[in-house]
Length: 202
Image (cartoon, rainbow, N blue to C red):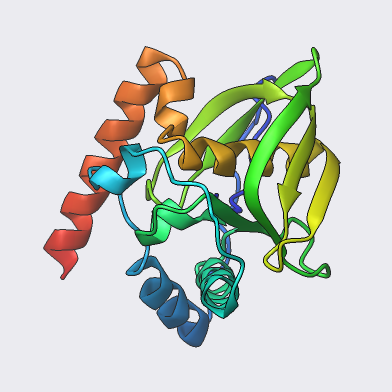
């Protein structure tokens, strides 16, 4: 999941918001290198239900560490294993930049709140796409960490949204599947136009 801030849908903006400052060249280069490792829309792995993790070994821990690096360098706040081409039920996220990265293996949502809210979401696998997605505001998640220890996470707000977004990836579900037909068409058009502009500039 990308970390682009959302603009509340019910807020009128009198004038165009200022564009974010350009990235430092070194940060931009790291981000581009990281995004090159992220599978994009059209890759079959993004539409395949990931397999449960059965071995909690050094290879799994290395996988989680590599994913955390890709996520951080890509300026994202969540990443699921299928996004880097690995069909494992494994995800990493970090909502607060001051907090350590959380690794969830074989996560299961055991409970979701009845209260839901709509917010804008982006995705590292869908560059230039931002759509409104409605999700429960709180979830209770059971999982294991990269060493096999059991975890129970009660998440609300942005953390709950990120976890749900990444678990969707483990089930082959994308944010385009959770938005309106109109937004989906607009998002696909924006992605095509951005790709054409990038190709022209290359």
